[in-house]
Amino acid sequence: MKTKFALKAIVLALIGAGLAFGGYWIGSQGKANTESTATAGTVNPSEKIDPKTGRKVLYWHDPMVPGHKFDKPGKSPFMDMQLVPVYADEGGAEGGIKVSPTLQQNLGVRFATVRREETHDALEVVGTTQFNESAAEVVQSRVTGYIERLYARSPMQRIQRGERIATLFVPDWIAPQEEYLALKRSGNDALASAARERMRAMSIPDGVIAQLDRTGKAQRNITLTSPVTGVVTELAVRDGAMVSPGMTIAKVAGLNKVWLVAEIPETAAGSARTGMTVEARFSGKPNRKYAGTVREILPNVSSSTRTIQARLELDNRDGSLIPGMLMRVRLGAEKAASRLLVPTEAVITTGKRSVVLVAGDNNSMQPVEVTTGRDIGDSTEILSGLTEGQKVIASGQFLIDSEANLKSVLPKLSSPTPAQGQPSTQPAQAAAGPVYRGVGKVEKVSPEALTLSHKPIPELKWGAMTMDFNKPTPDAFAGVKPGQDVEFSFKEGKDGYVLEKVAPAGGAK
Image 1 (tube, rainbow, N blue to C red):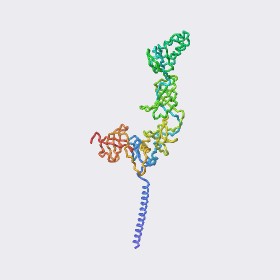
Image 2: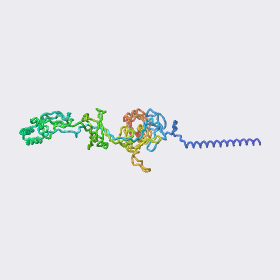
Image 3: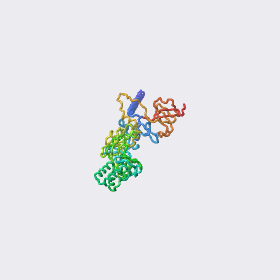
Image 4: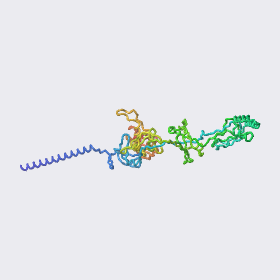
């Protein structure tokens, strides 16, 4: 009996120990499962972490082809470079982007500060020299006569003041002179004085009358001389020609001052004003400056060049300027004006607007639409959009555009976002741009894209490569199968390159 009781006690003890161990094991497994569940709730195993920086990675891409995204690092299929990670904390502000310092250095980004300077109004144009018509002199005949001798032989001949132009034979002057001499010899001073006045009324110069008194012989000829030093611009007679009163013998233009007619763009018409100071120079003497003023703005606009003409007056006392010379003209105001300036290279002109990338905090960059004024040297005037002291991107903007797909950001500047809950009335439109064509082989077909091994595409400077092309719709190109040789056309879209047409190569069916 005692032996049976001992065996039962041992069996019960073993069963109790087994139950205790089982309970401990079940409890520890439950705790482990609870900890595992909690860990799984806070850490997503699918999240990609950069082991070098410990930052969360959204995807990897090639900065030169930003539309294609990859879920793991590696070598770019497009360029001979490694894929670059795009981190989750690089989202930037609304309408802006963030570019890491390392990427800024790789893209060659330079910054500049918006500054305010005192500058003079200056406009550089081209112009052509002309004769100063206001200083031109006309040599005319006051009597009827004949050209006995012509000293100025051709137009555009230089001539000095007092130099002879022509000698006239005047038959009508002989009789009044003989009458005067006869009355003078008769001693009738009253009649002689009346004859002298009659000769003056007949336009006989006082010099001829004085010579008549001195020699006692009638003067048959009169010599016409140049009243100024200049150039004979018109010569209307030849030897032996008959002239009448009021007829122009020659026209002489002085060269002490010349006109310079400058062509000013219609858009800059308000920059030129009468009285502005002028500096001009021509290629024959690049170190010589000619000073002058704006004489007047001519009231007409050329329909072919869309320019207005400003008539300038230049000092030419040394006679070095002649008509027809092409000169560069700088019109400058005497008073300086305060202007807000940025480097010209910092302004991105899209055709419809001008945009500047403004640097913000935490390596962020914000596109800002600006209104530009005139160019002053290597700087551009900013009329609105920026304030003094802001930092702007002076170089690398187009590479940043490629990195951040800025083309999708810029339209937001002019297109307001529809109110929440209110549908947009604008229809979706395909991205405008050139159409490229290629020939290749279909490697893979998916609802989103076709993977094509294509030959070189010279328009994009692409070599032969294998890459994905997006479909416009999931059901597009239903008849295309892997292994087919195809001819295709595509455009650059917002998220990469989008196929437009895919057809069997060579027209095969």
